[in-house]
Image: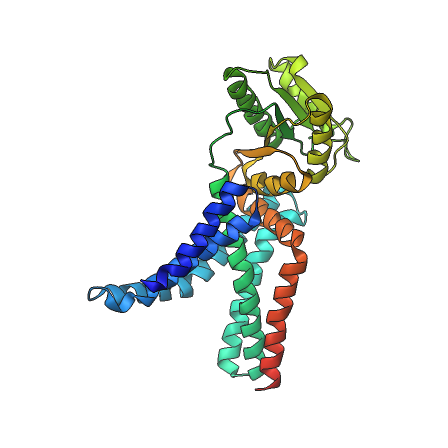
Length: 335
């Protein structure tokens, strides 16, 4: 029973964190630690399981550890190839392909270390696996909590609906990715308006990129108005270039017209949790909801979002990674 105490403690911290503010990466880490501790607790009590259960669990774990990485690496490479074919060869579109090839490289290095019995290769593989274990744990925390966050109930009321912009096709047309955000924003607006009270305002947030003929917010507003959305209910925030600026400049508009107002922020589902983190840092009182994204686009976009969040906490994360590397160097020095 005591084996499950850490899981209970981390679960309590998770619940308290969510009640205080849903938009914290610490919530994701507490959830991950709770699930991990629970799994360790189950394994600690495996000897008391009925006959055959322990053997079955061990076989499943060994298969997962042995075959799982190979299957995952293959799927990442396949997705990377599809991304390049459909979206082009930008660095962001190469993420899943590079991740898959990197996994195959580490597996090849591990095989080489086992065959040659090289101490140097052994330490290199061990250190690499330690760093990958830490990064993978954070990634699973990120994906798991982002999934939960995206399914939390929409707040009961809000003064604004803020739709975040993205790039335009041909410098002036709304692409499908942005159209899905706008349609989701319309749904949220109509839901809030139907609850009575003050009529909400929709803010189209997006500035003009160097290859665009007009600000994204203008194209977004035109898209909505052309499809019957009331023109007087749309405000254009046309200065922002990043998610952080989306939040800051939209907050200025909200505070100017309705001080102390709250909002619902709309983006794509893969971007929702990182946008929530940005909203919290900017001091925006807003919940973030996501719109659907094509399945093939999701893995690469999720990796990109995780990298951005990882680097937001770069002092801690890079510090821990360097500490793990230092352990590897010390292990090699005292071998």
